[in-house]
Image 1 (tube, rainbow, N blue to C red):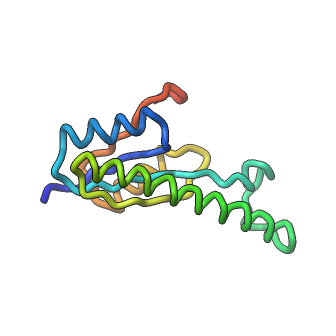
Image 2 (cartoon, rainbow, N blue to C red):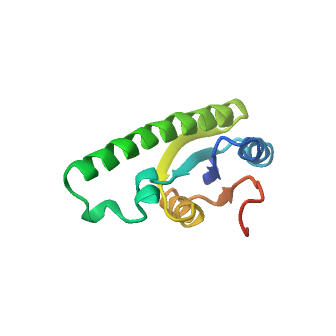
Image 3 (cartoon, one colour):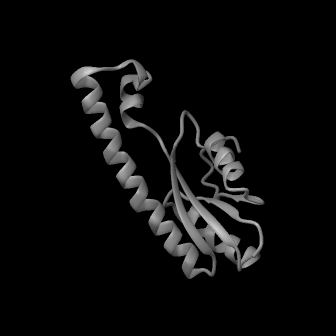
Length: 126
């Protein structure tokens, strides 16, 4: 089988179109469907959680655990869409900050992806 493709997925219509487009161009192929999520607790606290302890750290960890579970559910949906489009999909989540693209590049490297596919919502410079 061909080298893998990494597809960034955030649940948007544009990311769903990216999955369909990748499948049209590249199937059959192994696809890693990736969702990069932010730590809401770090965003709220405006600091890294590394130096927190006690009840504040416990609350932050609980909040992040819920975010991680939501990310897992979301990326499984993306993998299902990729499978339905003809790709052999593996769902992957990763925590990224402050932007998703460096984490997507790291994931592409980690999974030996030959291509990186994302949708465009016009929210960033890329």
